[in-house]
Image (cartoon, rainbow over all chains, first blue to last red; front, side, top):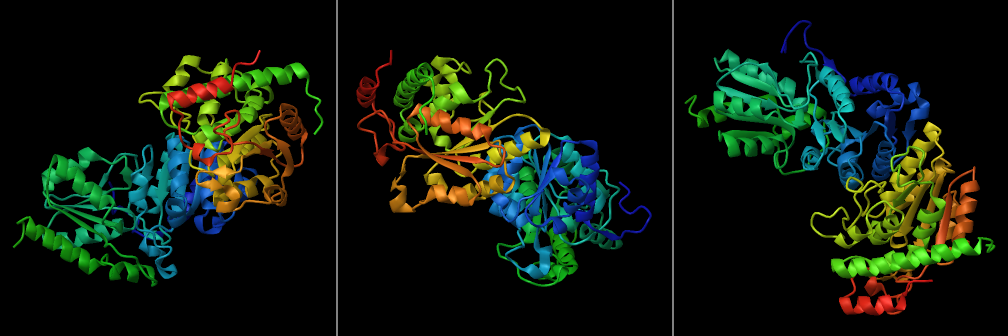
Length: 321
Length: 279
């Protein structure tokens, strides 16, 4: 998939990609509306608001009712994007998302930024690591966690084109651009080949997954990397093929291991093709303040820990001694 | 409020409301569970809307310019179902499938199951937000649709109710009418002893609503308030309708125990005896 095609990888803002794509979608669809809850500068919906002031509603600090208002606009036939931080979108407004949006089958796309530990200095109150689990548990909900800016733009377009509720989780941090944006719902793109091990990578862990794969390759270990941006629907055939062909799966995610993609991969493989699955994510604890990647390292998502987990998994699998 | 509604219209609405109350009792007795008190308290309000005020047509349920009714107090769905059946949106016999497995008549209404339900509701404080969204949509699209939502008084203890009211006031949604079914009782008892909402009309006014207080069982007053709301061009209207929980059934009236309890067969017979069809 051209993971490391030229030009060289560089960090880019996923939020910028989201905001710019909203403007592009707003040009094409004159009925599309965007809502925000007093965070439009941070979520980048302000770009849409400046371009289409009549179709932009900043409702203030009331995330639950932003979701019900969004549902009412969508039930009238519009495509609606509603943005705020992930902790408010999935946490504060959970029941509104559940009933006003999902149960109503309202065409609302939730653009949730500042997901995960990489919110950094704001600390645990804002570092939601439960949102993927909450959202993927909702009937009718699509869940996408892009790992770079091109995927964010493609995913924003994809959920706009697909009727029904969707949750797009983005981090605050800029991330290395490692894909050409060839995102499709329900598809897990293979970004690196390998037959010794599969690394399922989610969101901010995508570039670290590729770095880990490179590092293992230097030791003669082939680690396949799957970009699991499409969490729901997920790519079951590609996942199970990876289980068959590599025999072990390491899941990397900026999310609690209890309910995230690691839990999904473990249960999906257990039912159809059991292989050892190692869930590397946030343990059953709250985070804390700190620089984004320092917090990640503290909670077990730094490069040394990832390498150790990979080697341990290969050891369990009997591929190394 | 001046009683200037034509006598024949009022008598017709009273006859229809009586039929709806009879249906509510029979539906709930058949279902064995549900919410009679709040269904009966808002029956006259919903009758006035569905049979007079709303610009709706059962032959064209998806007409974009239709008016919309969102029942934010979704537990009163039986009265909504009965009104819609009498208006021609579903077969009358189907009312008695309420709450049964496979029925289109869910315990709280599901818009994906019945064409005439504008929004699935049931969790208090949400329908009113959806109504605000619909009113914003209509104004943005330049459509003449008016949006009505009926809320409960226990629902006025919920934060999102006031969030949504604040938004309706801020956006000056003249096409939005919020009707409060002020029966004074919630599941566990009187609103004012549990968590008082008074002075609720003053709260609506502070939130920029043209607010009127009426007797929610007198059609001339209901029709007059709705007519005044339709004429407004400078902001939303709130109608505080004083009602009686369990209205029309002596042993249910003003009894909070009848908020969420269905009548037995015998109780239903007694209730129906108090509610004979009107000539």
